[in-house]
Amino acid sequence: MTLGSGAVISSSKKHKLNTRSSTEAELVATDDAASPMLWTSRFLHEQGYDVKTIFYQDNRSAILMESNGCSSAGKHSRHLDIRYFFINDLKEKGLVSIKYCPTEEMVADYMTKPLHGSKFTKFRNMIMNQTN
Image (cartoon, rainbow, N blue to C red; front, side):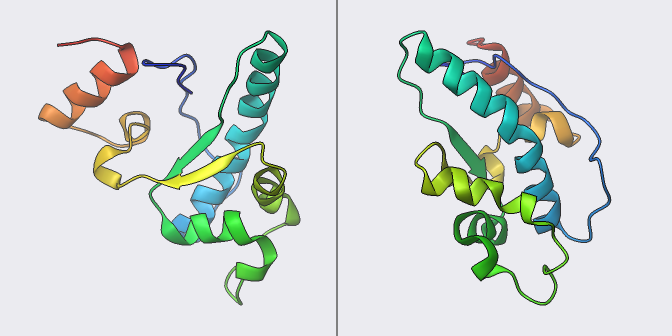
């Protein structure tokens, strides 16, 4: 989670359940991140700050499921529990927005993938709000 430039909260943890696809993994991760982000957004709003909560995704099928809810679920995603459509409810209420971010620009990859060279340095500097 970033406020301005630099990360305020960053974490990397193991999923609470096994997933069968990258789309499922993105849904689970977004659901796990939604509660603390929603709490922080509401807290800052009560302090008088105008906060926009944006979930950046690099998986287009996850974006569709998060945006359209059950109507995007097919035969391979019917097993997902309704709680993974929580993001859809938040989006419909206007509390969050979901935007596509290309994988090459996904800062969260710093926490989840082994990065080397300039990509590592770029993401590290963005997270730590450094200029070099």
